[in-house]
Length: 321
Image 1: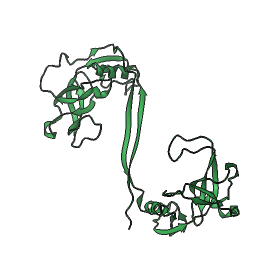
Image 2: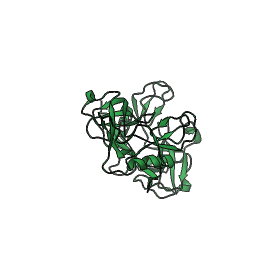
Image 3: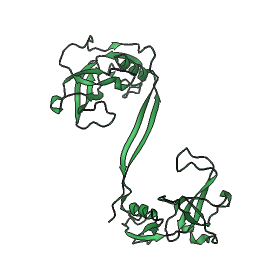
Image 4: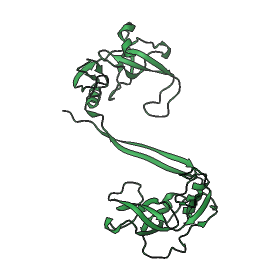
């Protein structure tokens, strides 16, 4: 059996958000080595602060300062840090209830090993050397065995939340790395395309040929394995005229208008997508007979063009609309 294809893929984009008065005060406070929480109507102190009470939905604006020391409430050991995590050596993810707070803050805890971490241990903030108004201004937490609170009594103190040059927004890069595999059926389909062939699989029950193949019939739900070569000619079943130019992407940067169509390849029981070329866009029609045009070295057709055959009769493709 041919090796199943796989490829590393990355989805990445910068996520930009504006900060309201509460989050602005919290992140600006971190820049100034101040940890702020917010007091609820029933006297609880929430850290990190939120704009609305999660229990009552009451709007919250009463900011308070809490200590940079606290207690681990629960934790999990991270033996293999990943890119962009707070530390590049093994560490613990810990929920830390800061002195004066009633909720816990999630962050990294720098410790020599899992045996050095336990619920109830005392920790303190290790501030980043360079701070910009982000949660990363807390570089991590570290074990703390002393009883003083660095000048804090442990009781939350009222704070105006006013700082010079407050942070008003953050940019958080979002990235997903993953390995994609099309599976056995579509691997065979892709490999056949590299040979300028279209291969589908026939359902043993309903006998439809699906292109691209799925490895199972979507109608009957049974596995498919019988390979069937279809095309290369086909019939336009439905189509649309694209009038809006796509973003500057290598395979989408085409002049408008152009036509994108459903094409039922001869012998296939399902239409696939393809661009129509070699004909003015306003002459494309249902029933138009087309064939693939291959770019040298490409793994799939660049577009489909008219074959010059008479249009297909509607009854021959109406079930494939």
